[in-house]
Image (cartoon, rainbow, N blue to C red):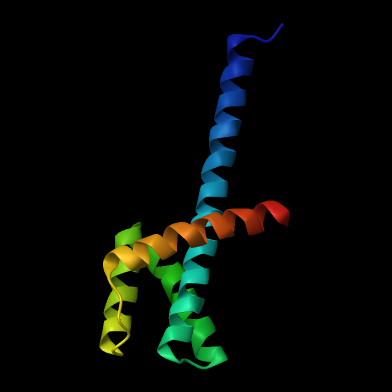
Length: 106
């Protein structure tokens, strides 16, 4: 019969795993968003990869989706690509679902 400590460890393990998966999904989503935005900006393959990784790094450093959202919107607007925060938020949600799907299939 499991003891309280066994159940507590189980919950802690489950929580830790959930946090790790969430971090990986967010990082993958930001990479996918960066690659998409780079395409909209007309960046080369190497520049697109660098841009995508910069978004991943920004999210980790800022601990914020808002920082990523703001950067993408500013960069797209600076290049004359029509967009709104709502459009980018929607894309981020769709890419989060895609990122989760990709990670679960690996």
